[in-house]
Image 1 (tube, rainbow, N blue to C red):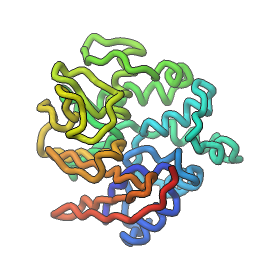
Image 2: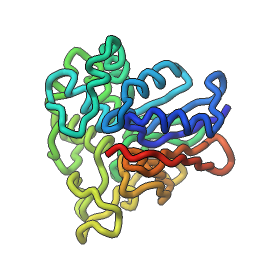
Image 3: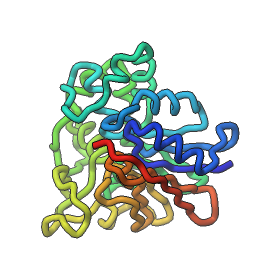
Image 4: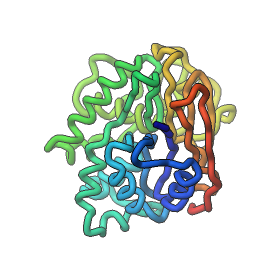
Length: 273
């Protein structure tokens, strides 16, 4: 069995099909793990969702910020933006089926067998892998409940910026969600800054990428993530970014993880935005 982790697809269905053909993916024996942001900005988000849904147990997928944005727009808790390309999902006859499937995806997935986990944006340095899984489950429970529309309304905002065990309610769930789907930089005090999006080396003084900050995550665990197209394919402290900017005319990248050494496969993509 071959297992491939794939970076942000964002509606680039043709690029995804080109990549899986290139890697020789076999649905009967192999698996595809997606780092979130299956949808939005690209032209064929509905086709991407249908394809991944049809893979069944052959696919694992975590939620990204664009996936959550789709759910919020669909439920009327957020306005669609100019660059959003969500109508092919929202107006589809199987829209409710796609949205319900997406709402039941996790925000974090780990495999003890491969000492590997996938998350869309990153892990807070003060959290271990086990702690991250438990905190993600708190958000997942609400997102899958009858209160999910309230969550989709309350999840937006950049505060709180500090993690405290005593955080409760929507502040707690918002912080967890922001880490898992939006984190890039922290300042020297451990505060999230969700506005800085540049590549490392261009950030203001006193800020570090989350993966460069010492914390409780064991080095033996590989963390695959996306979300950071200005970072691109990047490997540091066993955290591997697979967002190589497909949407922006870059590449769509997969990493094969079941082999002794990681194997990276990338395809060039047309620019959609």
